[in-house]
Image (tube, rainbow, N blue to C red; front, side, top):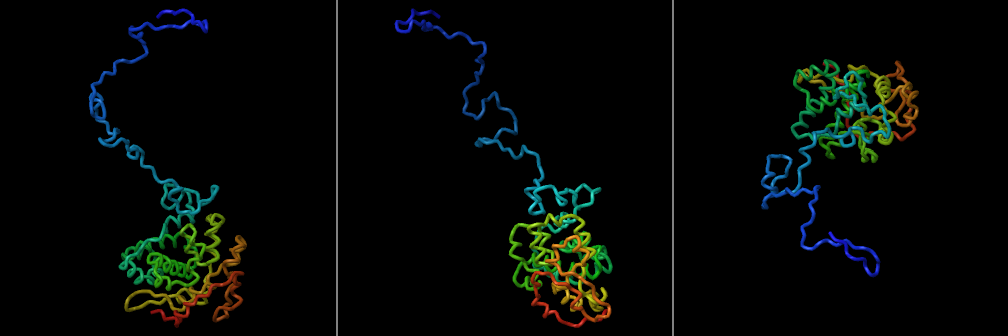
Length: 348
């Protein structure tokens, strides 16, 4: 390298590289990349068995096989819809299907995990459901659920309702348990076959309210009171703790003047139980589904949605008008109850 004379205009000196001389060696450069030219995707000397490399003709590395099989996040697959904005009772992972067996499960979460979502029923499955629709709930109360399991009569639908009964209604009186199972089975079979003909088997007050078109927890659909269903869609997390269910079980009252034995009869020829037509008519009247006043001491706002039970005088042969304090909302009449008129059949 030589130094040229100063420029006439700038008085600066310019370093001039010699011509036709090789550049100086840089000790920090690597000049050993001497693989032969090839038309393959990778140099021959780099060829090795590596499952990470993409197959020929594909310039992308498949990422999914490299990731662990993670379960879906709660945001992706949760039975509680919508989730609470903050941690609440039903946010607990403890459930009937979890490993937290030492923790009492949240009933609201557990019942929604049990019901999950409507399942389409085939014509054959629907025929089986209809055949045992009245026998199974009566037999479950009289003989126990295990007897039905041993007899091979349990279906996926009734297994769901068995779990629902064990979670929500075991502390109810037998009359209320039968009413709850009967009405819930009517709804769940309609969801399995959502036709106009099947919907006609439901009391009109059990039809969906407009608010039920909004995303919501499936368990809400099974509450009999339309006003309460609507309230829960917008504020379910005010009632998702276990104390709500404990109070509901102990305070639910069906306006029925007779005994539990009068809610059904036994057919000696078929050995099947059937629900009394009078009891069927009674549970299709929304005013027959009441709560004791103790329930409203804890949830006074629900008196707008649920009739209050004031007791049935023992001397009365029928339901006295003062036995029920109707809610301030419009009561929903059941036009179809007239179809089920009939006399109570004798127990065989």
